[in-house]
Amino acid sequence: MKPTKIAGDIKVANTKNTQTLDVNLADAGLRLAAQAALADNVLTVRDARLSAGKSSVRVTGNASLKDRKPFKANAIVSRFNPADFGTFPQADINAEINAAGALVPQWKVAADFAVRPSRLFNQPLSGRGKLDADATHVHDVDATLALGQNTVGFRFRQLGVPRFATITSSSACFVVLSYFSWTTRPPTFDVRS
Image 1 (cartoon, rainbow, N blue to C red):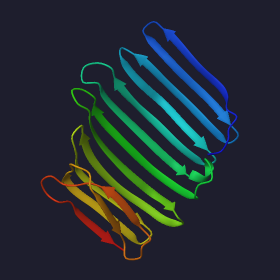
Image 2 (image 1 turned 120 degrees about the vertical axis):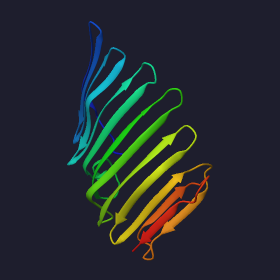
Image 3 (image 1 turned 120 degrees about the horizontal axis):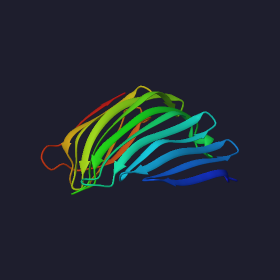
Image 4 (image 1 turned 90 degrees about the horizontal axis):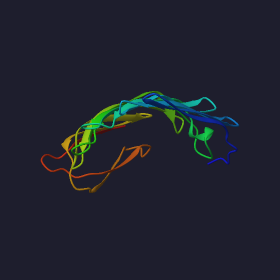
């Protein structure tokens, strides 16, 4: 990571039944801005954005502190280049991630992602997928990722105790490491290069 000299404002306010947080921090080329509020036991992140160079990660969402404690979040990654944040490889990643679920009586989440046209290791990157998870297992996974001319797909109903598997394409340009095992039906994998 790059050393920083962060400066800016963090404002906390309380008006009637609403607490608000406004953050505006900056460093040479790096910025964090966020607006959040807590009202009626609901935390709302109106906007939280981390940016450096052309890279941007934006998060919005809400979470209730009542009953089943439901939550919903969205993250949009635009032109994300790890090199903007330190000595990391160059990339241009564009993606969207959605998650919704609850924390009580046991946590559970449904999530999906889409990788829009991107580049990683100087090759095209794309993909999409979804999964459901709870305190005991991951299930209903359906995901596909493509890097260059290589594609890997995961489809399975339920995961249980971790095991180790490696999937590589014939050109060895794309390697996916995944920990899993199956309790009812083995997963299916599609690997194309």
